[in-house]
Image (cartoon, rainbow, N blue to C red; front, side, top):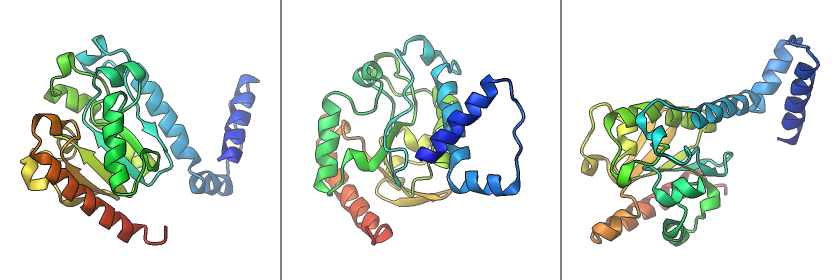
Length: 226
């Protein structure tokens, strides 16, 4: 990755000198693709687009849109629902008290937050913490799907009722997909309840634990060489 960053800096340097044409051949094209340089470039463009996004009215109340946090090279991803007040303030998913809850949950299946790239389905907080509306979900859909495409995680853990709405047009009942592994493009997704949902409905704690155990078992099957 260090070499790619140096190449990127060199291209920027040439551009600042007024050179706007770079000789390009098939060997260079293969090198950039094999080293994920083009994906890195696209990720930066999406990040910049998100920072100034005004596709829905949530931009009026947010402090900042949240791209995500963690390891962008990880093969594991967590998709949460939408930022709460703490996450909006700190600019990262699972900030505040929810961070400790997630750490404990992952620790129970011998994983860490650092093993994942963590993001939200909807990137901006909602008024009063209400669930996102359909137009807000649609506005963020391309951001999430492009994140998945470019970061290319093998296994995704999706928390809550919002992520399924990004993937399914027919809006299936949550109970029909919860705890099941579903292949979406090149990734496999496990949907389960959001950790914060335990506060309102303690009974789901057992269901989340069952799903996390499934996730760990499948993780071991996929990454058996780890």
